[in-house]
Length: 422
Image 1: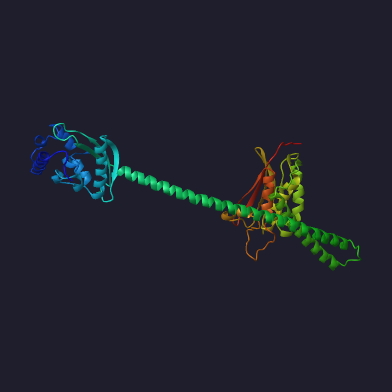
Image 2 (image 1 turned 45 degrees about the vertical axis):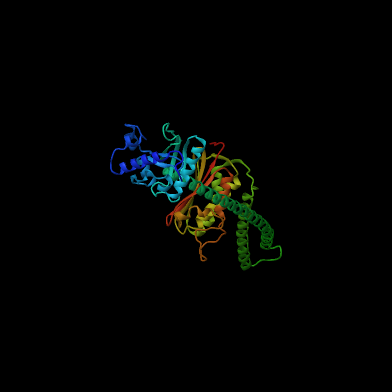
């Protein structure tokens, strides 16, 4: 492309400057592009500086930083068009920018120029260009300033990658949340169906079972005729099995009502020592039959608790029944004492104990310490589940501490509205 603005004389002077530079001769006086004293400052500037002339953008001055940033590390660039000394993609983009400056006469500031084949160390440049006319020779002289924009490019790419990653994570979270919501809904539906099934079946089982117990009592009383001693033994076994089954069914019914929010609390002033004595009287025969000691340690007479007596009694009987079942020797103790604003009931035993990993699992429905088919004790595994639900229903909590081979302590903590002493 011809140099329409400068003519042969200017090209000759540019070639002379390039030749002088190659031979290490000071050329500030030869070309007049940079005034004396300014040349040294420009050469040391960390920003890339260049001066071009004419439509072909022939380079008449470049400093060291310009050569470094564009990957042109020798002085042969002087006197050559910009397009010949820069990489293709960088050169074409930069020339397009300079063409626009030529056409409009307005400087272009802080324009980013990147190239696919740019030097590896500087893939992106930030360019400022403006017209700096030479009144005597070239009215279309351009001054170019460049700086390394690689860090800005990398930071932008990292931000874009981070945004994409966050978007992908967010999409996965949304999908996961929807999936979990669906699973939760399905689980809730299944749980409601289970509770309804248990409540319905338990009720249906309780009705004929109550009739069986009634007929057993009539037979024992001799309504249908004399009953021999052997028949009394068999009837007693029927009664024991039937009442045990009735207890299990009542546990399922209680759990179903608690899960559905239909279990009601009937509060009344409860005499705590009497409650412990009555509960102890129920389970004492079980402890005696098992050959272990049983003790009741009640607070002082007249201590009262505002709560549902039947539900507290049911919790204590469940805890005591479990303690006796899992204790081969030693003792089982039920006690109660005040602790701040709470009344704490404890049931302790010297039984087989519970492993640390299973301390919370014992409260899961249908779970028992002995999980093998040959376990020594029976039951549905609902006693502790029901007890904890009832404790929470009463505004308290049920917890356990235990050690394998040493024993367990179950603690029922209930708040009370008032305490009285006789």
